[in-house]
Length: 396
Image (cartoon, rainbow, N blue to C red; front, side, top):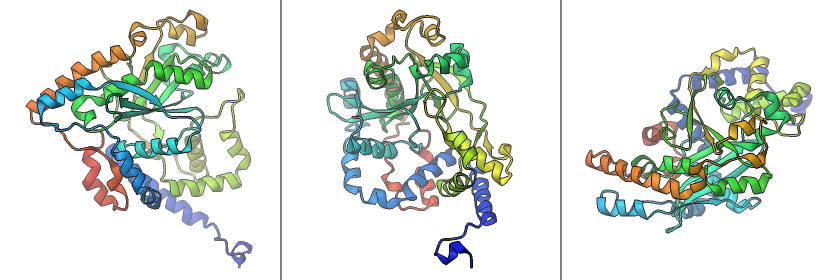
């Protein structure tokens, strides 16, 4: 009997755990992009269903905060309700655990993508209708990714600009930009929320929290360049990623090997996940650890790289923002672009006309999708049931 088993601790079976990891990766590799998204969402609700069951009252309360049309098939009334919306951005109070949990639960319930809290900066917002107080969508901005080829090419960025000059701290990445349904599909609600990301409230909140002017915002779209960001004046389409991102194993398999690497490859582990020389946290930690796991298990990275190409977008808030990010001008020389200066007034007038046109066209073509998308029904159901119930809504 081993020393560990004598004290009742399970002995780590290296070969068995390796095979479990490989089997999981093979399972994920066979999925379409839509199935992959839904699988992660199903896992999110069912790896700890008790968490959500214990918060059934909270979920019921939060569901009542979601904006819904009174009767989506009543043309006159629905157009009136679209035109009466007064969109505002409401920051979530930093350091308030209850407010933060409410935001995270709501985000998980209305968004098809799983929620993962990124390291570094994170600031959360609701987009609401000022008149009714109902939620139209949600936003989370985080520390921008260190390397995004098409963005860096647009700006003309060097490593010195980003790190030594600290200009990466003047941009952010939109990690959550989503709207409620049926507002999104039927009334272009995603375009509204995407525009609200650039609003003065968001920019001022970033400045207040971090002491740095927000000059530009990056984001990516899961379904390539055909996304809700297309045609929005505030966002420039940059192209697509190369799609060479490693598939992420399910948490239970990742956690097992993450802990093993941490315990047995400590020096290499610390070098990957520590802080940068400038004191900022390292981004992309999970991908780095996955690569360490691949190396340990002698798995070729290319075998589990997905071909899902993400669309890349950038909001350049200032006329000369790129010059500032290249350290060619000082902050006091920044000149805001007119549409960002006009702020909500510009967003509101741009969106409402298009929202009414979209709704009217769908109604005339009998293509309205009236269903509310709320994932509370995902709790304690099988994977097959989840596919039957929700797969059609992925990407809506």
